[in-house]
Length: 119
Image 1 (spheres, one colour):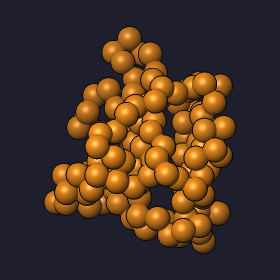
Image 2: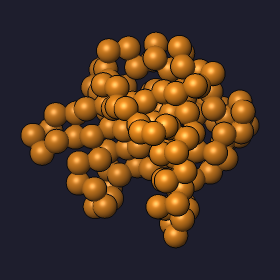
Image 3: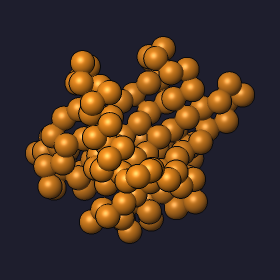
């Protein structure tokens, strides 16, 4: 399975998990967006960061960070060996707060996940 397809499957499952607790979530698809030529997709919340990149030589890379998530083991089992850990300093919550501030003028990528929307 291609890493892009694998990422999209993980994304779908992660959204379902976090929807159980009505999580405030960032989800941006860069594939048809010229904002960042190497980024493919990013999802994030206060306890999770996942990013799929594609280099100019078409090599995919999945980076992730899971911190204090009630779904850590489930997400890690979905990722398996497909990704590389990315350390978020000082914490995932601080990084996500920075993301919210950075995108404050363009909030379209943020939403509260709801279980009924993720079925």
